[in-house]
Image 1 (tube, rainbow, N blue to C red):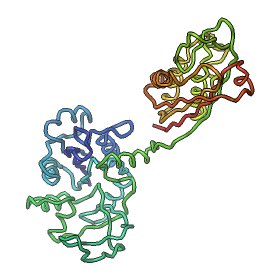
Image 2 (cartoon, helix red, strand yellow):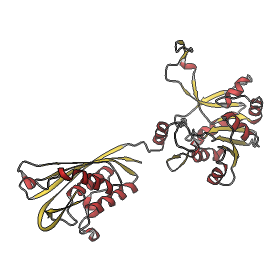
Image 3 (tube, helix red, strand yellow):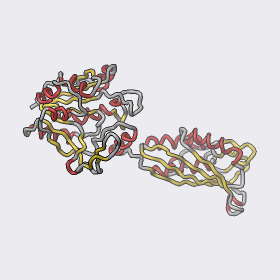
Image 4 (spheres, rainbow, N blue to C red):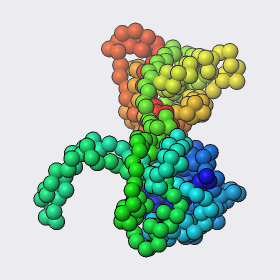
Length: 372
């Protein structure tokens, strides 16, 4: 017995604040609508999309041949009725594009229940919160027995004729099962899925991303660098030229602040360290500027799927004096890192060691990154 699927995708996305239809919002590597299609396509014979008025052609081009696109209505029920006119199967699944991560397995379980003799099947989750009904003054009227409550999801499955009969009245409802209930029909509830959440706000999108492995799990790294001063060398530090100060020895320009940041980013992302990426065995990086190395590091971090949350660097030495150029240093380092937030501080070691004795300069950096 054949199965069609209707995907209700005519929502404006106003609550999301995207400025375009919600079904076209990107979730990971594809739109909400494409996620929904990919889940249903393996188990249905026909897919019909109720699109926002004015976006029919754009959605047709997005989904390609073999999928019917119709104009949605002013309400969800009107959109489903428009699509239902094109259904040519014994059973029909009605799905919301906003529940983009509902799985193929869920659709299969709904279809199996239909084929076993049910005419209306919906997925639902147990209610775990205490639920109270209230009157028009906000006073509690009753506390409901949550063991009898379910949070209903989509896709919902129906005998095509039963759904047509339910929609024939032109009534409105927040889901199609409610129309069946109005006619006294029986609706079966099966177990739903946590990942079939409805994506309505940016916070919902973050939750959905977690199911795809993009849940902004943060990672940190620490990096250090130190160089001795060398006569005849030009000093570059924190992406800036310091013309009145002696520079430091090094394979590249010796920018200890930039190098420490690179090492911190490599440590946070597990991409090695400064030496393994830009070491003396890489002649192309001889005399490379700190800004260039930061840009190269950003590219490597980005290619590995990470984004920078923020970076801090502390410069250690008697000179140069950082305070007067701190804002410039922050701007230069942030620019090299694609606009990432950067903090810059400075300290001395009270006459101790390489930096305290005025023989060189060092830096310690930390980086916070997350998986995109």
